[in-house]
Amino acid sequence: VFAPDAPTAAGFWHWAVYNIPASVTSLPTNAGRPDSTDLPPGAITLPNDVGSRQYVGSAPPAGHGPHRYFFVVHAVDVEDLGTQIPTPTVLGFNLFSHTVARAKLIGRYEQS
Image 1 (cartoon, rainbow, N blue to C red):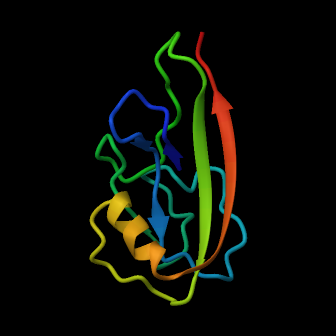
Image 2: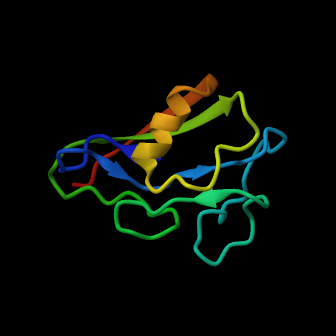
């Protein structure tokens, strides 16, 4: 989950998880909580832009205008991308050479 409209030079990563098996077609509501056991075995959650390994919700500054939130799922040509991926940006680099399909949902939110 990435927010390109965050007031930073590089956007804001809310959540990044990889090595989810292709057989998984949904995740429970609280799968992004730090104490959750709802992610499949082997799935790896990377630190987001506040440094925590969990989903962190949207909180655009009041009056900053609408923010987009990209929820993206990649189908890749390998079962495992490894365990040495340190950040969501490096994950994106690895996905670039392994993605065979991608689905994207863009939400918008504005705080008045």
